[in-house]
Length: 330
Image (tube, rainbow, N blue to C red):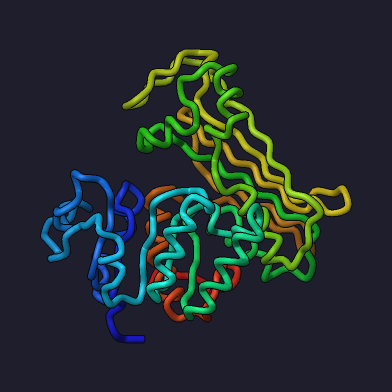
C-alpha cells in the first residue's frame, strides 16, 4: 500500500496527542479530522494542540458526527480505558465505515471480561467491513505479544511468566495518581476495592497470552497490593513519606486444571529503582529474557502508530494483536 492513509484523531489527551505526533512525522499518513470535547482544544489547529512546531491545517472539533463523515480510512481512538464506556463511540465510528486502532486497554481483548458485548462489536465491524484493534504497550505488547512471540523457538511450552517494573517517578501526574502515590495503605485498599486504583488490562493480557498459545483457561485471577515507601520519595507532583504508598503491585494469573499456566506480575511505583521487562518461558527449551528501555507513553504511541497500517490492511472484525502480522517499526 503506497497511498497515504487518511486519519481522523479521536481524543487528544496525553496519549492521543503522543500517537498523533508519531503519525505526523510519517509521510504516509494525512490528518483529515480531529475530535475532542475539551473546550480549550476545540477550534485549535491539531499541530498546536499536539505540540508540533507547525500547523497541519486541521482544526479540532467537538462535532463528532460531522468529523466522522469525512473521507478517512482510519480513526485513532484514545478516549478511555473501559470497553463498555467507549463502546458507543466505537459503534458510531464503525457505522461510518472507518477502521479503528484504539488505546482502550480493555479493547485489547474485550472477550476476557465482556464476551457478549465483544461479539456484538465484532459482528458490527464485519457488517460494515472494517477492522477494530485495541493496543498499546501494556496491554498490547510487553506482557502479551512479546512473550508469545518468544515461544516461536520452543518445541513445547508449559508456562509463561512475565514481570514488568515501571519507574513512575518521571511519568505524568495522572499516572502517579492512578497508582495511589502518597496514599495510606488503608486508603489504597479501599480505593482498590472500588477499582479506582489499578492497572487496567492485566486480565486482558492474560487472555491474550492464552489466545496466542491456543490455551483454554479455566479461570483468570487478579490480585493487587500497595507498594510501601521505606524512605521519603519526591516527584514533581507528590511527596511520599515512609510507610505511605508509592505505587501498585498487581498479579494476573491464568489457571488450567488448578495450575498456573500464565503468571503476570506488574509493579508501577515512584520509587522503583530500575524499570525492566522480564520474561520466562518454561518449556523445551526454557527461555529467559530481560529487556530495559521500554517507556510506557513513548512506546504506547509507537505501538499504535506501527499497528495503524496493519489495521487498515487486516480482515474485517474485532481483532487482537494475536490476529495481526508481526508489528515492527515501519
